[in-house]
Length: 511
Image (cartoon, rainbow, N blue to C red; front, side, top):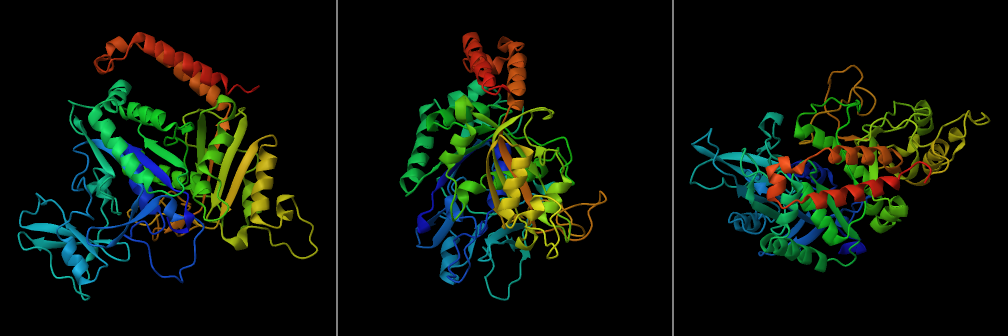
């Protein structure tokens, strides 16, 4: 891998995980392009895209740039997306390569609302999908420099599945469909943990996953680890648990959409909306092990957060970070006072009175000119934060003041989070960057926002895990046919409950 990137392999398990993943892949630098830019004059960024993406070539010799990704979903969940992707087995690809080598095409399924037309989706060299309607049975129109097709930006009402707004190509080894369960309908659903766990015990799916793992892992030069995005509300929880066990993954962070406002206008019932917020947080949390220079390895980050038997962390974010025009970072942090600077993204209830043991904090998207206070020479600084000479010092000092005894890792990045379409229009440009002052959207959507995010090992998890164990104690699995059909035994539940309570003890405040 170019530049000696320390590669990460992503597993994306479940349909809502697909929504989060689609937004995340769309947000990555150069994510919409099918191959990395060749302009040697392009300045290097702070984040290394090769950590998540891989280079390759089609059978025709065309360079490709695709996510290092294995995803699993259910039958009927892909819409018009081909299971093998559109790069390597697309008959239209030959014509595209012969034309100029910078465009790829594939034809979507016939639109039942337009029986006389079909659509040709074109991924241009600028990384933008464009669409043209063409008569059936006549193939795609000639691609000429004078053609100006309309950019393909799906409307929110038209989005049913995550592939409807995915704007990157996937490798043929990425998609693994679980055909025995249905995405839609009442019957044949993947509901229970045991059902999902048993999926990866079947030779068919076990071999498919192992083959894909070997393919991606063996081409890596410096693999640093795996990251798993997994649905927890259905049987994919069992798929994820089995995969994590096989890969020896330790640290888990449960994230959900908070009830408290985040400074954005969204519809929490729309997966397209809430997954966008979680993808933005994910893009921030994972930044430390994706840095081009002086990165924190995934192993180092996990070790810091999972000491003394701790395996679960909480997540929090401020989206967007409230920095007003003309305001400095020290001023903005001082305005937060002693309150927790981010909104919890984990279902841990009220965090007041809880203790943080260790945390990884990332603040990104703040212009360098705003990192420190610009005091008039000779003016004494009003606070210790305003006396700091670098933004990194400001952030570290602030965290030390907030949590004096906490083991903290902090990163301050110039790179903001990208929120260009098809990311939903949740922010406004007519106010401080990304903020909506009066509860209504005005002006054009912003293209990037500052974000403050953190992963924390917190004593709040003691209460949360104990409450979860209490709820499970009241559950009679014999009343749920899908649990019994998956082979779940009463003794298995009792064993898991004991493990859960033991894990909860690791987060006691006095530990």
